[in-house]
Length: 60
Image 1 (cartoon, helix red, strand yellow):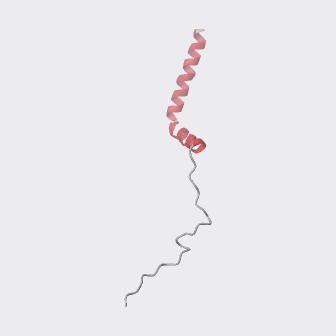
Image 2 (cartoon, helix red, strand yellow; image 1 turned 90 degrees about the vertical axis):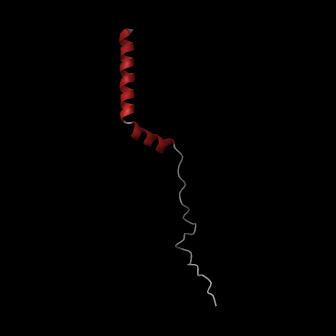
Image 3 (cartoon, rainbow, N blue to C red; image 1 turned 45 degrees about the horizontal axis):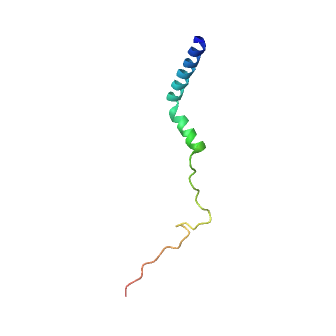
C-alpha cells in the first residue's frame, strides 16, 4: 500500500513540475482551444479606402 501511495505522490509531483514549467504554452493552448473567438472583419463592409475623400465646403 505504501508503494502505491509513493507512486501517486511521485506522479503528482512530476505533473505539478511539468505544468509549472510549461504553464505559458499550456495557458495559450487552453485560451486558443476554449477561449472566446475574436470576430472577423466583415468583407462586405465598406472600408475607409473605398469611401471618397470628403471635401471641406469652400468659403466665398
